Image (tube, rainbow, N blue to C red):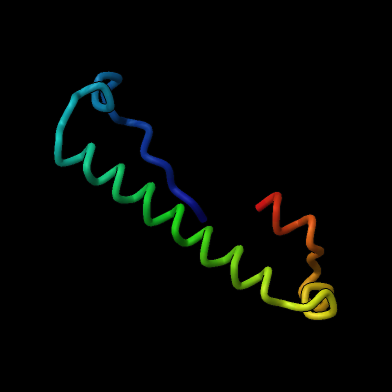
Length: 63
């Protein structure tokens, strides 16, 4: 079961905090790299292997 915190102040995200800005940029770079590594690994699979996991070449591009 997921729980979402909805009690934040409206201006909480508006503050320009260099540490949180760095954290967001660093997190975005990490997420981009994870997607890149995953795409490369999937592109290395054969069509048969992709079919076994329920994907096609077109699905990789959409990820």
